[in-house]
Image (tube, rainbow, N blue to C red):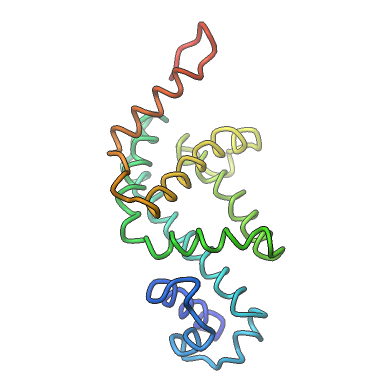
Length: 197
């Protein structure tokens, strides 16, 4: 690995071992085997490195739970939503340090333009990924309107359950309960005379 990759790996390790806010530059240097000054050279600051590590670690977790949905091989969007919830709830406990770090990084968005730019790009990609996952299509087939509609709603669902898991993991519903709640909400929100999917 390059020194930059070593630093990212060290920062991710520190996210798990010490948490976002308690990790120091010296912690990262020790975990990565890199020189302290190399953090500034490659990332500009410890905060930039930590935020990059959070985004990468969150993306890796997203890939993990997406793989669980795709492996189920179900055909309809309704079935894939259920599989998404099941995979989400199954993978969150082991990823809790990353999820907590992600919420801490989000809190920096109003105060740091660089963090805002990175988070905005990550969220934009997540909306496309979520829409593709529910529809069972390649990401390249998701248009802007679908990403803004289905993708945004699905991503809000995922991030909402992440926040619940961070605050009170015991309050999370079973996947069947969550799926039933979504169907009930869809029925309530449907225009008069229409039927929910």
